[in-house]
Amino acid sequence: MIFDHTLIHDSHALLLALLAALCIGMSKAGLAGAATLNVVLMAEAFGAMPSVGLVLPLLIFADLMGYAINHKGGSWRLIVPLIPPAALGVVVGWGLLHRIDSAVARPVIGWTIILLLAFKLLLDLKREAFADLHRHRLFTWGIGVAAGTTTMLANAAGPVMTVYLLAHRFEKKEYLGVFSRFFLFINLLKIPFSADLGIINEASLRTNLVLMPGVVAGIFLGWALLRRMSQPVFERVMFVLTLVAAVRMVW
Image (cartoon, rainbow, N blue to C red; front, side, top):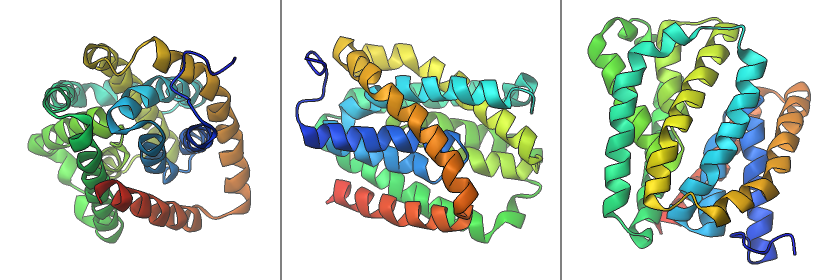
């Protein structure tokens, strides 16, 4: 059968995983609020630790599509200052995952997402406060380490990276180009660390093949929703759904 030797063992897990794959695609189409929801859906379907490794190849697949679409905006040079601290953050996240088991990982990821949602609220309220932060090297290193750690722990560094990009005040085309380059780089960097943890394996890769059409469908769905629904409304809906799911992970 199609689901033999995958992590999908029942229809409930399949439904949640397909919804998560749709969220990944929608986030790459421009509906950023869908990105964090996919983390909690996957954790609900497969468990906190396995879901981190399962999501990674799907994100890379979506990042490659995003880079192909946005490669004319930004440049690789603009992410160079973030590479050393982000790599350090990945190592920190890898070390943390080495020291916690699945029972602990679930609330850790839940709290990480809740903190990132709170961070996003602060960002929305205080956008102007970040206007000149990019001039400080400490800010760049802090963002890089935080992005690397949160993306290794929960594939949820979008709000952190948003602060960095808003501080630079990039135009939309350049913003999307830098964003897609950074996550393509950081997600490729995470592969050997995730493989070392055993969360990328033959069963997870077979599961990825089943779910990849959902990512593609999510990209097209995201473009359709953007034409019919304002991004602020969509972002608020995704925020509430993600918060509810994250609270469930904690408790």
